[in-house]
Image: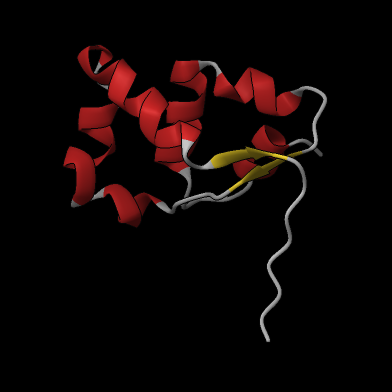
Length: 82
């Protein structure tokens, strides 16, 4: 599955899904990759940046694009604990 389809099944990425759709990043991530998404849970944005409600305001689209661009990387990266 592509990244947007994977996020659909996770209940704690509602804001991220909305942000990706608002900015069009979801279309990029659904395309040919590979891409790595460092996916922040909704709670990560509750206090920072005014929360998802603030970031999803059309007036803040540039800030949303900037923030989400830090979470998307071309290529495949895997985290190993150890």
